[in-house]
Image 1: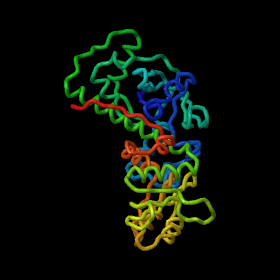
Image 2 (image 1 turned 180 degrees about the vertical axis):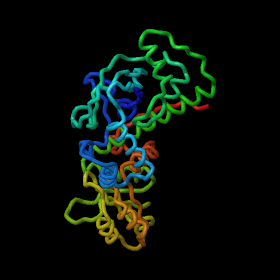
Image 3 (image 1 turned 45 degrees about the vertical axis):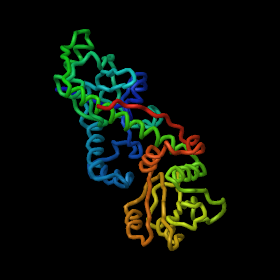
Image 4 (image 1 turned 90 degrees about the vertical axis):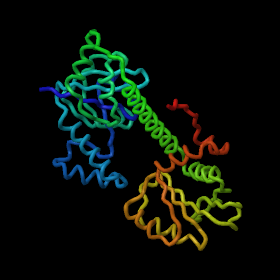
Length: 332
């Protein structure tokens, strides 16, 4: 008995063409290494928790379920589908029963399976019911037999029974597309941030604070300066809130000692802002919560959200660091 699976090609399908050209399908979580090294679900979970320390419990459970399905449940002969939103088409193939860990083959997605791709099917050729069932944003999920039967029929040149979608069905599809677009945009903005060097990161943080209405400047270079960006309403630090920001970029996940060291640099009337693109350990977040000074931790996702929220007020320096364009979306 064969099963049917959708494997989303990265965020929004950005690797669909790579899949087709290399006769592969791939998922991420590459930091876990070769998935065959884990002899039990427990050992995989322990490694996952140690690697992705900032992951929420619900997200962890979902991720582990998809990783195990990709490694163990997909079998030779299973039908695999992947979507390319640019061409609005589904890539259709059958698994060849070969899992492998091969970094550098498909972007940052090192967990691979070999696939015999049979062809592509336009999304517009499918019924509304089938389109809706394929709209999940999960990396990996199973597809029902009626759905794969319709896809295969269209692939073989047969006309799908396409009914005029109801208003409700159209609304569902538009909402799903909007969510997918926002999610993909968020990841691309994070990519832009990650590509900055440490000095540019400090300038970016200063630009965000200026866009929020503060007068901010990067501290002079030098050893043990402790604070990277200083901001206040008057620019002199004479009026409150007086914000002191520490910026850690490409430095890994920040632990409690880093937070305690930063708190030690704060004085009465200061508010702290600790930015770490590598995230924070649970102990670090606990340390921040118990601080006697107002202290906010900002990770890479938070930073991307702040950029989007305040981009309209960005100065030229900030826009040069993270160039973005506005996308308009129709409202009801």
